[in-house]
Length: 227
Image (cartoon, rainbow, N blue to C red; front, side):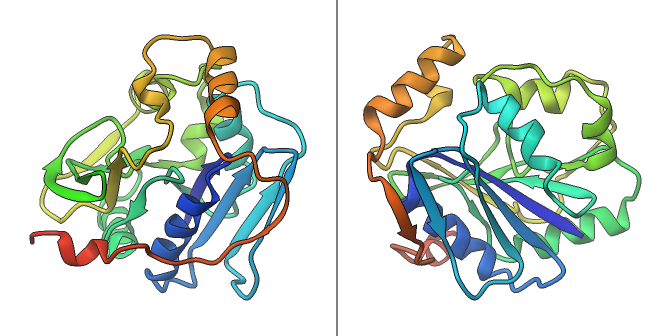
């Protein structure tokens, strides 16, 4: 029913945690599709039939381009965007699926908030542009993608007259993480795609070759959430 689309680049230590958050959902009817466009790295994950890793051998010119290509590789109608530094929340996919089933025919489904962690410390439920945004594939098929790497999430979600269902009654579906000594594109301000790509190459992991992924949590994030 839902395809979790995860974009990644040179952050396999964070990607392993994002994958673990999907595994913990225990939803065989859903899939996770990971798009890695570091041409010098092949990520390998074994024994998970509903997790697909695509090691794309050319760098996308923008995050938007990567999303546009990535969602077309997903088999399900509903596309959940989960960045590699974020996590699915406890029962996140159950909540998301129920929202879709009980409120059909929306273009975008999202929660009114997300669990916010800074430096892996829980700071409460907050709201941002991405609160666990889910897009129908039919909606993505008809919009024009913005060809940018900063603010593309706001454009895709809010700039195309989408019919949006925002759930305020159930718990959030996503853990949004800030800090952790990594690059956050949304904190770079208004800069060009070229600067975003160059900065990522300057500061992120330079490991090359085949990397065997080991899904795991570095900490028990769910136990930190105050219900």
